[in-house]
Length: 602
Image (cartoon, rainbow, N blue to C red; front, side, top):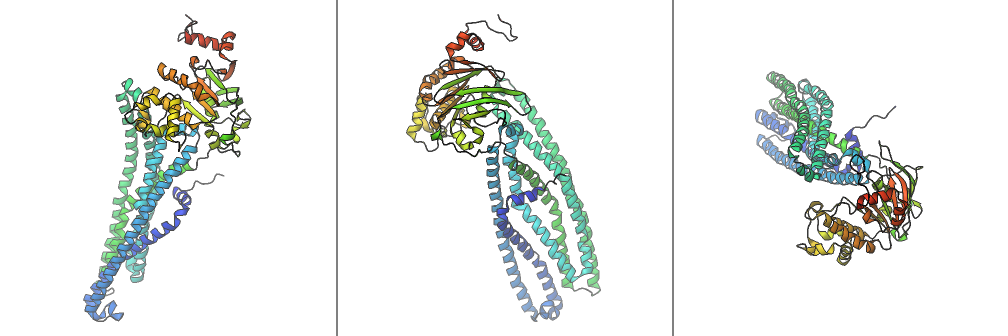
């Protein structure tokens, strides 16, 4: 039998148990503020009682006989009550708002740290836009509730308890009529919550989908413009936004109906109190001052309940968002630290893909028993057609994906990388990929990302090794030039050389070049090739390439076809074998028959 799913609120309270002391203090201040807020009607009733009954008033029975003195006492009490109400209002506002900001800050950092640990399959299935929606909009919804909604719920509850107690103590007969609407309001509120919750869950889903669409479109802006797809993208956003609007409309219709229905129930209780209490006062069964207090308190009890709809609306939005955030936080991490440490300074650099079998979730097997050994200090190239499994090797080496145990292993210096701490593993490998990624900072900051704390001289040396120093010097502020988001002010070749400089500065014992020159111009490729001898000296280099001209000087060349090693050897030996590599070489150099789109030689 499955365990019932816990409510988002209970999960949230457990998650932030460390903040319970401040929650308790803020709650106490909210309650005390409401208690003192309810005191003025009692003081007004006492004032009416003094004026009407004078020496027969309640205060007179307590020893303050003179009516003028009674009014003075009431004035002093009024100042004290209003002062305390203001003090506690300030206190709860500061505490709830600071708590809201703290929880928002901590939850966003925790969620982001969790996302960084989750595997690529999870992120691919979730999508960047939906993940961004969780990190921003969903966490902000929770902050809005803590900022005001929590206090509102506490004060409504306090009002019901205090006013109900006063009514029962003063006039049980009138109390029945005043309190009669409350059960209906509470039942209606619970029904409202159960009906509105799935509607807001749908709203949050549609927000995530819309954000995913926008994130993807922003990433693909050059493609959209080159295919004149602006109108199509507007149409796609219109459809997504319309689904979001319809989801909100469904929630709004129910939310808007709550307050008017509750108001009609409240009118019954207020009118009954007015009439029954008035009749009792006319008959002499109730003092005028007491009647005044009950009328005022009835209004204080019932009218705030009309805001329950707005408060529950805020609450349900927050809980729908909380559910999404906590689901991310509690997603099991599939790729975890191994028990062994592997300090960078102790790594020789042997890399062995030992009979690796691997398939992406829900797809056919990508690698079929791949066995590749790169000895320390050597350069090994892996070539093959698109989809042959070349980039998958890089992902497995970094443990972005992981082959199940029993289906081969990736080893560094003989140690299965699944048994190595992730930080040690990834510090040992520097990667330059085809798709460059730069941060919206300066050139210096982007290169120094490879080794935080590196000196300016070390950064410049890495830039020189990667043939980037020349163009960097020509920039308006040199190494301090800010390059915009993802380096949009630079050319593709310049971005690639900065990525290479970043990897060089990292100075890892294992360097991976994953199609690093496939998307650059001939000049950039030539510049990178000139520096390769200096960059790869003394380290193991794994080159994933499509252009065979970039790997002809590798110590060993591995040819992959459909996830299997079909050839291995150096450039000359593979050409002499007249196999798959020789055919690829002849096609790329124009020394053999060209194969057209349908596979016919001509």
